[in-house]
Structure formats: C-alpha cells, structure tokens
Amino acid sequence: MLNVDAIDLKYGAAQVLRHVSLTAQVGQVTCVLGRNGVGKTSLLRAVTGQQPTSAGKITWQDKDITSLPQHLRARSGIAIVPQGREIFPLLTVKENLETGYAATDRGRRFIQDEIFELFPVLKDMLGRRGGDLSGGQQQQLAIGRALVARPSLLVLDEPTEGIQPSIIKDIGRAIDYLRNKGDMAIVLVEQYFEFARDLADTYAVMDRGQIVLSGTRAEMSEDHVLRHLSV
Image 1: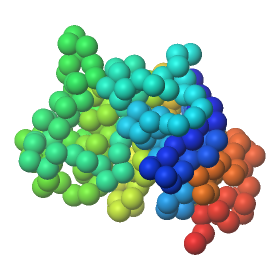
Image 2: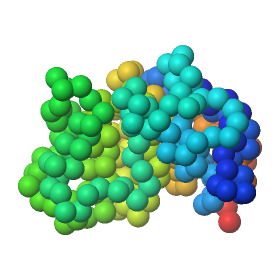
Image 3: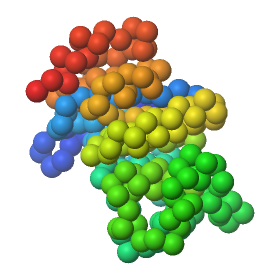
Image 4: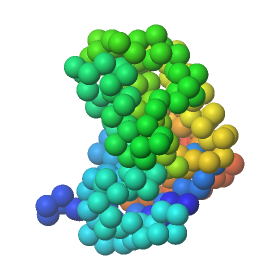
C-alpha cells in the first residue's frame, strides 16, 4: 500500500501542498480530481520523488520512502506516466519502450506481450519515431513504457488530456485490466470526471493544495465533486 501522511510541499516560498494525506491499495484505482493548479501534479511529483516534501511522510510497501531519490523509488516498483507524455520524439517506438529497462533487473529487460495486447498499435509501429505518432498513440506509448518496468504502483497524470474518445476508451480498458490483475496499485489524476468516476475504487478531490473530499466510489456525491471541478 502507498500511504501519504500529511505532506507539505513548497516551490521556493510558495506552499503548494498542505497536510495532504492519501492511500492507494494494490488491486484498486485511486483517483485524484481537481481543477488546474490545485496541486494534483505536485502530489504525484512528491510520491515519485521528483520534488522533495517539507513535512509529512510517504511510505510504500511498509517502507519509509520520504527521502528516497527518484531512481530508487523507480527500482522499488513506482512508475509514472507524466502529464504531456514526455516520450522521446527522435527515438523509435521500440527504443522508447526500452527506456523502461532502466528500472528493471537484467533478466527482465524485454517488452512484455501484454503491452501489445493492451495497445496493438504499438506493435504495428515499433520502427516509427515517437514524434510521428498521434497524441493518443504517444499516450499509449507512455503507458507502455511505464509498464515495461513492471511497476507495482502505477501513477498516471491526466492520461486523457487532448486524446480522442476512441483512445480514451482504450486507455480506460487498459487501466481496468491492470486493476483487475490484482498486483498493482494505481493512482490516477484526472479532470475528466466521467472517466475517473467509472474507474475509481476510491477518490480524493483537491482544492488549493488540500484534500477537500475523499471516500469510496459508493460514497461519492457527484454534485459535491463537480462543484470543486467547475471553474
């Protein structure tokens, strides 16, 4: 289980997270919702080690990782699909996928067939440069690259942003499949409410650097959540 306990995060003098707590269980999807600029990406950066926290504690699989550097968090099974995808445009699809090897042991440095079963288009485009793919195909590539590392915690930052509806459905099916395998915790940051609602086992809504609503999907009041998502 991932346990984020009352963390603070600052960029210089600006405090962007205030006493944020969150849990994510293996075999479940935890959705973090909120408008732009409320601290969702900063929370993910804290979890993955891209930004240090100034207070609080983060534990993963019963180990304190609060001060653990990013590359060691990746080695411990934490993978991120960043907002904006951040694929390498001049590398081929195959080479982009192989960058996921950095967090794996030598004996597991191969691309699993499962990735091509989830996203068949990647197998058809292995020799094409990443920059030649559509935005939706690049998003599938970014998810595939994270899965190459065989994570036990998968963190996705707005995977539906700027993506056509057909590929959004493919991504939703992939997340549902990975959750149902039962060996991975998934944290999904989203603004697209319907997508998050349909996938969430638990949810947390952020506003001004804090968690203002949280609970299970069964407990979710759509009106209350949407009030915090509207501009």
